[in-house]
Length: 581
Image 1 (cartoon, helix red, strand yellow):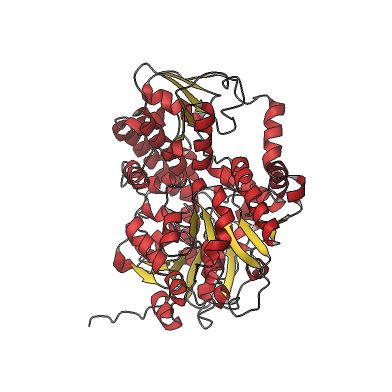
Image 2 (image 1 turned 135 degrees about the horizontal axis):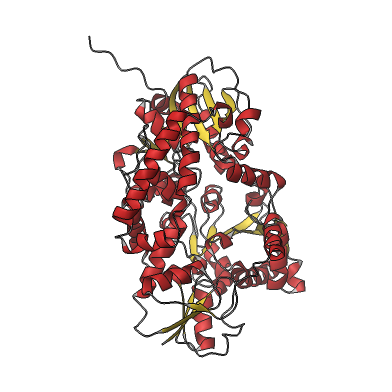
């Protein structure tokens, strides 16, 4: 049996491997079910992706098992599990281990396996099979000039402020430089609920709750500049975590050395005997732990300084899976303070992988509540229906609308090794054909992480010159105009489906391109927040389906159930318990 491992940047039909007759082609990226079905017909062999090798529930459960192998072994003096924090950065690596392990079960003995070029997944498969998998072509050029060109190509997609943040994250993640230029202000005068944030979207959802309690005080402490790019209400003070970072502590250094010794013992004693984690150790998957531990303990000390110097009475988190903003939740719980978590997207799969950190969790509606309990496994009593009272989500329903746009919400699919150019070539011609027939325009709304320059080039290749005039690209934050003028919206599995539905605009999901194991798409469909399309040609039939779709009040209540200000206040500022006397 001859098996080809296809690098995410290669094509099965172009290259020195294209003339060989293969029995199986395994894509190390993701092209979508429609593309694989077509390739199978053209090439006369089975074509699959590593992303379809595992049942989604099995994938989730095995990820949990891998993470559980190191739990409760590296707990620091503040009850923070250092392995649990570090494992948050390994989800992609763990997923690759699991997918390659599943692939080994499909490979018969004495199979001939080659890769189009070197790839970490190919090396992992070789380690699991205990055989060398050779590349057909040389890897990407490794010279200084080539590496510089690759770096420049990545940087052009970023705003200068994003480049600066990345630099600080890499070279000053313990705030030892930024602490010198961020001076601490005088401490808050009244009791405050802490709002830890690393990103703009996290700060935004936290502030939606804050605006419901104008008489209460809050302290927004950002770990990156991105988290500060929000409009603050009067009852919020903004600080940088860097301002609280203390000098390096001898006690912390002693603790670091002790934890490192335990880490080496954990790798020898437990990881080496685990088939997959043992491969991870040999492939240096965990080599960053020492650096992450050093910086993590110093960041913990900065958060400890926050609790020591500010009158913090509780924490409202918007991202407890982030390794930096999870820390203050643990510190607050250890100090007996209330901790509440909300989600800055429609759904959050990461809750399925790690221990419940916060005391209570807000679910925006029944859809999110069902996902938290059913998919993620949260304790039902700790999940509270409680979206912020934000009228903007349905503010457009009463407006007169000029429905002349088809709005396609794109995403940085390349992050998960998806072949965006394949998807664009499938979806955009169909959208343009429909737009031309219905006298509409196609608006491609880009995600903040997408490059306008790169997407323009992709679109130019995907459509004809005539159709190019039907397409307009949009950058920047979400605008009311997009939904005011949308005939319908279309995406893969984005949380924008909820916002679209809340504003009375049907959203269609490109289910054939959804390779995510999180089952977001299924959950959106289950609660009528999205309507699935099984292949590109179904786009032509959307006008017929629009006549059948009714977005009811009940549908919207299932997606957005606001919490009352009184209940929110009681959760964040509970009355002191009476003392026994």
